[in-house]
Amino acid sequence: MELQVLIFFIFFTFTTTFLLFSLSLFIIHLNPCCNCDTCTTFITRSWTTSFVNLSDWYTHLIRNSPTGTIHVHVLNNIITANPDNVEFMIKTNFENYPKGKPFSDILGDLLGRGIFNVDGRCWMFQRKLASLELGSLSTRSHALNVVLKEIDSRLIPYFSAVAGNNNDAVLDLQDVFRRFSFDVICKFSFGFDPGSLEPLLPVSELESAFDECSRLCAERAMAPSPSVWKIKRFFNVGSEKKLKSAISIVKRTADQMIKKRRETGSDSGSDLLSRFMGSISDDNYLRDIVISFLLAGRDTVASGLTSFFLLLSQNPKVVNKIREESDRVIGPTREAVAGLGELKHLHYLHAALHESMRLYPPVQFDSKFAKRDDVLPDGTFVKRGSRVTYHPYAMGRMERIWGPDSLEFKPERWIRDGEFKQESAYKYPVYQGGVRVCLGKEMSLVEMASVALCLIRRFDVSVVNHSQLRFAPGLTATVSGGVHATVRRRDLQQ
Image (cartoon, rainbow, N blue to C red; front, side, top):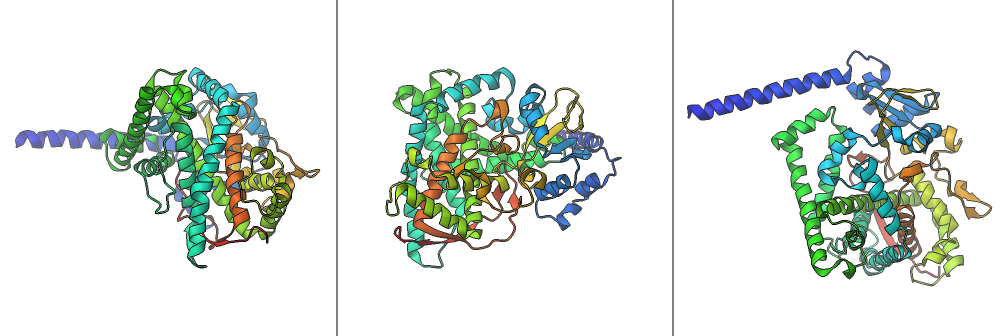
């Protein structure tokens, strides 16, 4: 009994000392001597009296900054919406702005050595491998086939079932699109069908685990100091215990898929796993790579589609223009989903999708960590080790970038001489730019365009509540409470 008391006393003393030490480091890290308005407002959270989301407060501060850049000293974070700074970070001086260890620590337990969590040679190898595979015609053809099959066999039947119940039937668009994109990316990455969008909307263990991983990793990033979550991870308590359990489910499922594919042979499937197997023999490394694609491909597409239909519900004239364009290109009565050739001619649809992501980018901000002292093009000094963040959410709301109508949903701004035209990746870094430009950009746009077109032509989708969105913690923009809408079937000939 005395031994147990002694062990408990030693454990308690060690824990208390460790916590006090970490708290001291945190206080030093916060630089409490800084009493500027920005830092005071951040520390006291008084920004919540005027803004629903932290991103909206940052947007307000950046809009009022002469350079389009602010410095949150207590976080050692420089946040910019200046296109020149963005180009400098992700292109001109790319080598000085890697993801950095603070970022890789946050996602390391989940993504390991996956492409979205590494720098240097490891990143370069995966980048070349992924570029080769994702750029091939056979891969793109396979991806489109997976998308079209999921649309035809599950998405349309589900919307039809809801529309056929009664006029007051409501569905959560965000939930449906997350299920749809999860099924698609699982089939494309692993050749595995979780069946998330089956009629009864089952929740697979893998899907729940992914949701938990995204939420809890985001909470790590929001912690006032890394010591907070690292202590909990060390003692395996609280949120870190939940995260460890969720990660084990994701990795166990991935390991099972890899083992099964090794047994059947890599040439037995067209998915990414089969394609990567020929170049990677380390199964743990292979798992990290495929999980990275699984994470990125699921939530970004779902987020983009959710905000798109929210904005369409607020702008019925845009819906009518998309329908008129599709009637000209593919005919007013055809029910088959448009092919790649036809999608290319739907200029207004692509303009509307890009305009939607301008206002609601799936990834609202992206951070790097400076390797050396530097000076940004706008004159901002960057100290070595500082976090430097470019903010697509804020950039989409800058009058100095998009003009006096920057807050309007206006697809026409993307149309020139009757055709859709891309903007500079540094003015519109939704898919990043430079060396790290998103390899899945074209595939994600085809997926979103295919879904949007088939639903817009067949259904009237009306979001129930148009109030300001409140974003939940997550690696991508996720609306707290979902986005609920009514669905009514429409005649293709009308």
